[in-house]
Image (tube, rainbow, N blue to C red; front, side, top):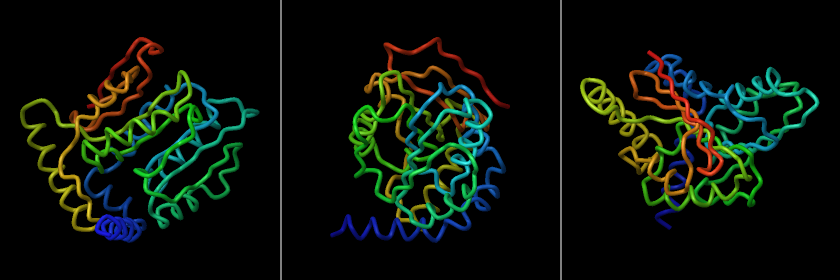
Length: 241
């Protein structure tokens, strides 16, 4: 019952934030989070089916659909499954993508990602944009093992999130901002997690390693494409100012 009550409060919180999520984000970070979300889209391999976990108001989904029209054959059919626990966030996604006019089919699923088990070998790409930092280490170790089973052979995981710089004033700045953000989401949505988890170590345990990586906002944000070790290409890494 306690878990159910916490989940209900969490969902209501994100429902309330749906209309204000983008303005709040821009007040703190400008366009830097959206730049990170889209930074490596052009380095994704061609795909047929994509799973997007927790895209919120759908700005990344919109960018993905746009990128398909620009870079992939118009005759090819693509399917995106977008999962979020907030019905209001999914409504925002639908509104943003209404009349997108491409051959991309989008399926919206309202559910708790921790309870979602994708069919085995069903997605070429998994996308987690500023999403994994919502969970603690135990939750991620269990859930990521379930989610990665949904990847096809050669599939990739497109991950965007906050990280702590190694040292100096950038690390101090990141700690302050992350503390403020965790406090804000704890008050508004009941977010239980209060610290960043070392997801790199979890990816390594899943035999997933970076094939492309970009660091931005003074090394506080990272965009990474992971692939299974036996299939990974030469890794590339770049940094934004």
